[in-house]
Image (tube, helix red, strand yellow):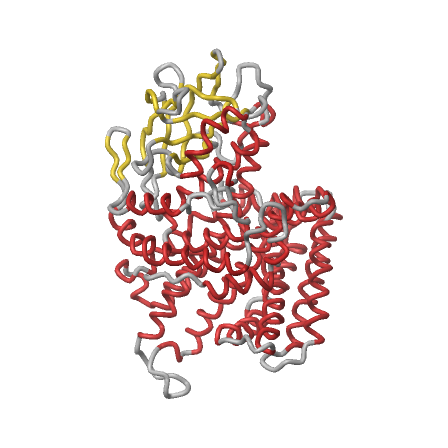
Length: 593
């Protein structure tokens, strides 16, 4: 199950499809030259392959220890975390003022994909710490920033997100945790469940970001505030004081990510945990969702990382497994069988398309946060808002299906734990659930993003898709059927345009019933655009004498995607626009209830 970072493809996407040169012109990102980024990613790839990947299987097999509220991570986990901290990989995008690297979001997307692909259970901890850093950096007082950011950025401390309660999953309006004012702080009480890395032994302190209600808070989501609740109280001089009134009651026994502690945390069993208000009262959900937006993109990247690892694993097995005759009569392994190549083609081409889509979303984050003119920032914020639910939902769903194909490529051996193929599938399954299920991402896409701006962001991307189709139609270089690629991207733009117009015109519940089909269709059509652009730029590099086997393969994968993946979009559009009514006619009695 060795993992090798796909550095060549990452750099190709960054430079040719995400505009790394333009990103390096943004204020504060001037050091992000192609040469510097390549060197950084090379080192990150070594850490992923040499340190994190070998621990993936052993961590899965060993799992976690739990005794009287204390969690013990698997052998090698803490050493790996110490190395991550020492090398500065904990929070690559954090501001240098607080000890971060100050890298672009799009470069961090590459790093996240490597680390998540190599060892998802491990990387969940730094991923959530990055979210905590963003929330504190964006909304906390200067005093709280000074107290908490340096050690969070360095990784001496880690961070968590505390939203879910037993009665409040996706419905955060049902949160019951309380915050009672007491001098310059608050006393927090309540229970939170499914808290990733809510307790562990890798860092000296854990900083919990907790949603709770003040005594006079209005009902519903408008009455939720955000609090910093440290595991150990931080003294005025920065040293650690007493253990706070928060404890880990239990850890979950899960289908996958066995080495990642998923905790139930009890706050306030002994009078109330000391917490500190972040920002203004009753705006906690607004702050947490800003933090969750990037977390959702990172979970989408998890799906891509697992899909990449599962693909590498399946390809390696297909190249060594000797069985049956092949159509050519010469290929000695199952790689010669057309159906094996079909499955591997689905895995590889969709992973490559999803990578481009996610990196483009991350690049727009950089422009939305750092561009000097307001119009550019607003344009890219619209794009971020539109792309993130698609990137999260589609990428994680294809991560699960790619891992499932990986099991299938292994045949009966894939169902045996010793081969490791099953771990990818078990680990990937959670990605479609946490940080908002695929259904929630789809509702966000059609009910908030498209309905809110009447399809403006979608139409801006559709215009770019049509330009790409025109450029493909003008291409004459050998190596690809450019007319077919152009037709595919043009049709993708047409399907998106028709579906967007339909969504905007609806007043009933049909968009909700169609939402997941719409999200998947948008993922596939945006993927067609991505692969069309990838083929175009790969051909230009080849024509400039900068060709490689990988770039030639990119042309083949683009053609494969257009004929073996993209046609599914037509059926999904039909399901969305014609099938929503039949979803709504189903009643509980139809299920025998």
